[in-house]
Each structure stands twice: as structure tokens, then as C-alpha cells.
Length: 359
Image 1 (tube, rainbow, N blue to C red):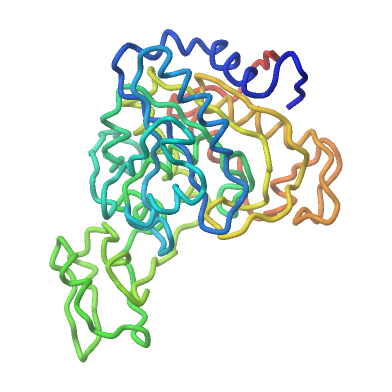
Image 2 (cartoon, helix red, strand yellow):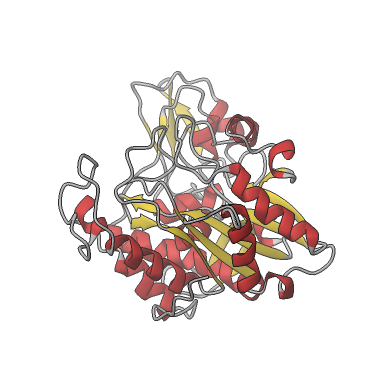
């Protein structure tokens, strides 16, 4: 993060992209998906739009056609359908005037615009990837590196695994059975029935009921419910969740891996995901920006760099604050964050071994 009058952070970021040979990746007229997280309403830790613009301008200089993108969320919030999602992106500074690129919600209006990618892995034979990600010519993943309550940390692998999944894909990662209806909240309006593509919902005794035998796990009913009565059924173990997330990352890697660049922004390293409507104090100082063509190595390096820092007092980090101690287990002692790295390496997405080249 050091800079001076001769070279500021914008110049350094562009030079970083040169070092990972972006010129060999982006061809003239390529549609280049720049996958980021716009941050939930109230969050302030997401990557600054002015830094994203450096990536966009670099792609444009090479003749590519870049667009910013993210997929809709599974949970109810400001990003669970494309209209609100785009509005929030604008509120957080991701406009064409700011970043010099259009914003496209990758899985469409309601999160069901997807492409099935065959992977034949342990948990999934195929995965449901947001269409604008799967159909792009090139992928640049720009991830804000931070803590996460289910994976220990969220970096590149989470940005492409969870972040590039359609709503159906997010549901299948989080749960292997149908959503549930909170009967006391249901007003029997029938909007969930209108949206269900599998005819799996009926109104019984003035309450919606989901037939788990017919449910396909698309999660469209969650967004359709105007009162939030349909809930995610959180039933996965942390290990199983991480493996499923990595299989989705593998799906993205299988269709974009040879034409991808991965960036981890080790800035405002907050203790929890940018999906929260707040950003707590960072747990360690800003470190820098990493770039790689290997999604496994970059997350391993980022985790090692965070752990090498002295943790901040008066942050969410209540233990393991010393240099070299595991900051992520300090935040979430029950989470083994190495599961995601080991499984991604096993699936052939990259290597945990790495070499840092400081520029």
C-alpha cells in the first residue's frame, strides 16, 4: 500500500495487472466480466470504485469490453433481485460515470438466468453458474479479502464459488432440502405459488406449504415472498458447505480458468462478509493487493499475509492477535478455513504452494 509522488496506488495497480500478463488474456472485442461485490447497504468495506476503474480502463485499453457484475443473493436484502441490486450498486458509487463500464447483474432479474456446467465432483455432477459469468470471454475476479463465519475468510475462491452461483446454486451450497415457511409470518398472498417453476407450493389452511418432494431448490420463492415468511433452511455442516462452495468455484474455473485473473484486495480487512449491512473495524492493517492466475495460491498467500500481521486491539479479534497467529481462528475458532484450500487443490484448481513477487 506504500506510494509516493512518483507512483500512486492507481499506477501500481495497473503495473500489477501487467505483471500477470493481462495483455495475453484480453483480446480485442472480448466481453470481460469483472466480478466484484458491491457491498450490502450500510457496508463500507467493499473495494473502492475508483480502484475498480483502473482495472476497467486497463481492459478497455487492450480492446476488451469490460462490465462489472455480481449475482443476486439468496437471502432477502437489497441485492436479492436485479432492480434493487443495481440501485444499490449506484448508491455505492458503481456507475458508468465512476467506473467507465456498465453494471450487469450476472444471473438476471430474479436470479434464475444461469448455465449448467458439468463437473462430476463429489457433491455435484453439475453446477448452476450465473449466465453472464459463464458466457463471458474473460473473467477478472476482484475480491475484498476479509473474515467469514462459514469459511474463516472470504477471498477469491468464495468470490467465484458463492459469488458466481445463481440463486439455485447458492441454495444448493447452503442447504440440501427445500426452504421452509414461517407459518406465523405467512399472509397466504400466493406470490410464491406464482413464482415457483416446479408447482411445489400450495396454500393449505391459509398458509403456504412447500412440498419437499417437488421442490427443485431454485429459491425463487424466497425473493417472491413480500413479507419474508419463506426462509433458507440452514442445515449444512461447515466442512460440507466449504466443499460445495469449492465445487461451484471449480465450475467457474472449468469454463473460465484459462482466461481468468484473480485479485485479492487486502484492504479494510473486516471480520465478516460484505453481505452484512455494516463493516466492523479491520482486524489488521491494510497490507496490499495481490494478483495471480492461480485462485488457490492467491487465497493461501492472502491468509498467510493476514496471519503475519499484528492484530488490532479493540477489534472483533479477541485472541490470536500476535504476529504469526491464526487471525481467522481467532475470529471463528470452530471453522477450519484450510478445508476450502485443500479441496480446491485436490480438484486441480491450483496449488497452495506459492511464490510472492513484490513489485
